[in-house]
Image 1 (cartoon, helix red, strand yellow):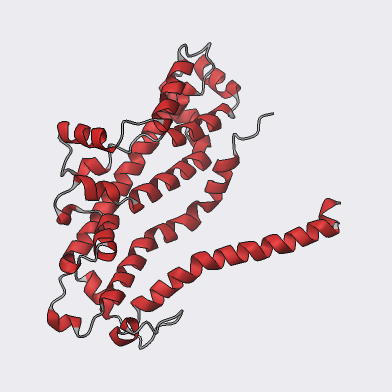
Image 2 (cartoon, helix red, strand yellow; image 1 turned 45 degrees about the vertical axis):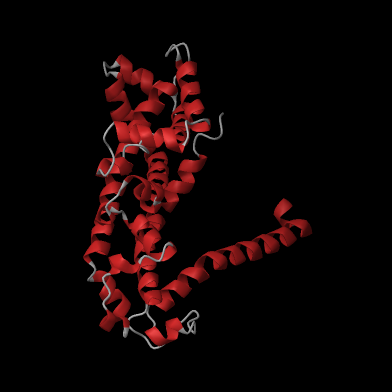
Length: 292
């Protein structure tokens, strides 16, 4: 067998070492941030923290949890992620179903498909898009974080290919029994599309949770910022005004430890959700990719 050959064993060892190295490159920075967040001010400011906390302290987390602006930014991100992901799933589902049909069953299908592809490749640019957002009254609104990214062509194509792998006999039987297209979509296609739905949901959740530029661009009030935008202003722009740290607290708390605590809290939800969706994610990426 091929897996008993010398070349395969050498490749397997090399591949295993490479993946371990890649995993360490991803995990070590996160462990370092976690260690800094649990360290005391003196150790963090002196850059003495490695992969283990120095002079263990919870002051950074206490300050972060007691910061109402930070907590509100988490709530904004939670709302955005839930509503944005739900809306993306609904639109993707409704768009992919008709586009998965043959041209004989849905006339004009190719035209609509190319319109979706065209919108993915070409766009009007940032300034025209900003003007459109301004003209339709979405500036400084929560919905400016949800509606512009509701349709993702890549996700539509992913779901479309999954639908094409579903046997046509299921739809034909459903239509013969008197079910319409909506009943067929939600009663037949939806239950057997869970792997693909989980994949799309994971992509959408990561996008909405980590997106920061739209909040910075379309929201003028920092109190309306989602978590990613809040962290960008605090960490990248080093604007500490929203952290509400007075001079007395600065003697006990380091800006470095507070920022590290906020980064870890911001990354935790996706780290918690991903293991539960991983099995569906892998299956959803491969289903529909091979045709018999």
